[in-house]
Length: 72
Image 1 (cartoon, rainbow, N blue to C red):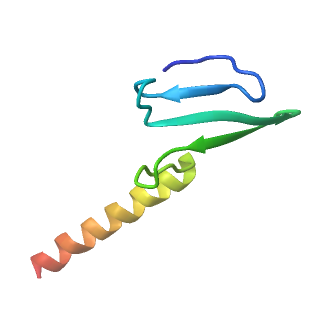
Image 2 (image 1 turned 135 degrees about the vertical axis):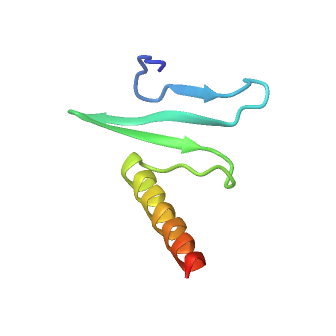
């Protein structure tokens, strides 16, 4: 894991700097809250961790249902 320090308005380039996959910018800092701005192509999914885990759980439920349906 890479840990870096950035100030408000500064950015992190993801991928090759000549053709980046995307950019993450520190949009704002207030107290203990940090606002991030993500600039990625539409085809790149960006999710909060809790949403990503929910998607994975739903996929596993669907996979299990498909396996059970095939066993009948």
